[in-house]
Length: 323
Image 1 (cartoon, helix red, strand yellow):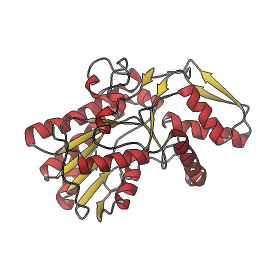
Image 2: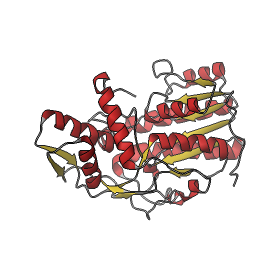
Image 3: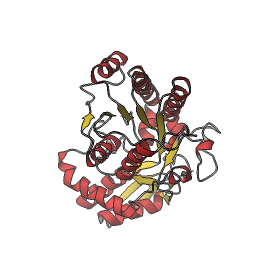
Image 4: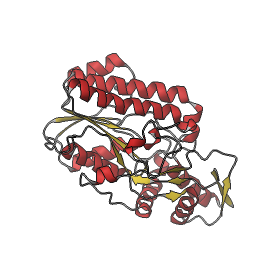
């Protein structure tokens, strides 16, 4: 298994697909700080990645040397469970178009962003990469998970057949600056921040949270993920995909209590057990990436405080931005 490689040339052209999203915007910040001089981005209005002809034309014109595929249709339990056809179709289209166009145009290195939801609902914890395809997926996000599995397998198969240098990372639950705080389609942590913030402003007596509060989740600040991605692009050229996480877990009950305290909400916290919990536990084994030399740096409370501060400063500008 190949592990070491030459660092990326900061003077070459790097395309970040999905640069306005949570992950993509963090990657842009990290790449700028690292001195990349020729970064290429496109908004969805400028380039629809689900349209094959448009993607192929873009790659022929721009000829990027490196590609980071952070573009995806994402959402929480409600969105995944309500729009499964959209989640599998749009994500498959994006992955097929970008990965194949990268090969057609001789991209030197590509990094594919997956998700820890690729793993079976019931599998040994912490979850090792070898658990992939070892059981049934969580039904509420099965469509998204299947698309992400296809993406990481595409990278592996292109490497095998065409000797490309495509690597894949599977992050745990992410949060941070530029997150999506919509109550309809956001993930649990930004949704909690918004719920408690609005309840505090309104003087509401209670805040209701979906589920029983018992599921355990692992969270990673998106700036740590961006740091991991650049580190791997510079130092890793292995055939195996890697989990990226904090290596720590917290129950939704304790998470809600932590967000409540950080926001300063003094009302009651209520759980609605009639709503779905999702996967009971999801902690990733990050020993594989730790062996490469990378370590997470931002603890959960510090990260939530930074995120809440950003949310407060940007609330009036609109927190329901479309991705």
